[in-house]
Length: 434
Image (cartoon, rainbow, N blue to C red; front, top):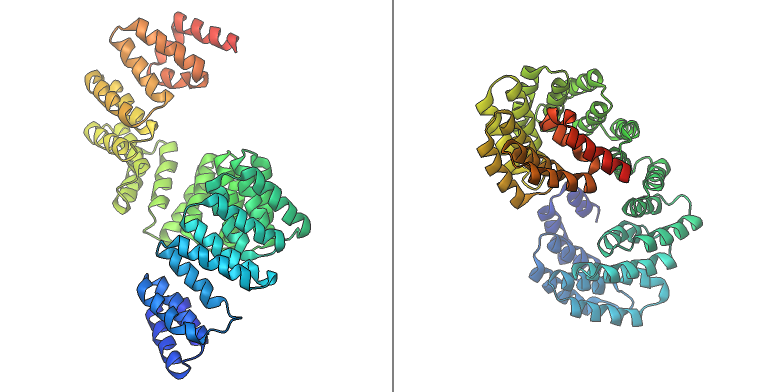
């Protein structure tokens, strides 16, 4: 068993199978070896061979041994024979004691997951946790069911009950944090996620998810602290350092970010995001040549990242290399075609170059893939340039009604509009109406 486990940990399934085959030759009636063999074959998607293994083992199974039946049910689910799997599970429920039902319910939840019936998966795992609030397998699996069934309120209620019984259940705090996050209660979510790794300092996902949510809600100091603690606990890790640098850039601590990133380059010269964030630092310093060098290095490592091309495009434009700037603005828009910001960056570049015909063509193309107030602003600018003031003013009214804070996009394209009396009157009118 120890040798098999060793090979499994090493990821050498073939060697583990060789050892279990030898074990079966010497102990043909020992069911546990057949179960291990079936599980290893399933890991290699060799489902027919796994079924043959289970069938060979069935004559050796005692009436009190449910492990082979459970792996049989899992295998049926993987073979998309969910009805057979559920029938087998129902039979097991009748045969075994209540204390053994937890393992049966866990497999039943796995079957519902394979059926994409996440509501039934949730209630099955809830049953397990109602019986045993400390069942770690159920706590690990239940978030998937909550996320897809959208049972956020019920998840909050369930995990609060678990925490009342066991305040040191780090997985319960973790699941609670995600449920609060989906309900938009970010302060409670961050507090719960933080408890998950305070209780279990080795719980890496707790640090990362707390940091990610902090970053999303603009709490950059908190995000930085979480990433820093994770890096100290599990690092050094250049991915975590890139996230830390992102936080420092958001905090406008560019020298600190650059220092961190330059150290990271020596540790891992193949991390594209490290070069990207270095490019961002130099962009904020208006050191366009250095910014360009780092963005191009990032692109050489991954040419399908829209933000890398957008950074290079801006650097090329500021260096006066306009053909290359247009090339990369176009690539950023095509790669990130569902994100309006990359289309609007491209269109605004064309407007700055007074290439209004092409800007209109790009805008029409952008409308097929993306929507956003920044694209509305681009359309308004092009309408004003072509003399279609009435149509432009109608769009400005819509923009001010729906996205009043986004008027800055329009001012960014046409700064002279800040002095336009009619537009200023419209802005004042809609501000007053609110």
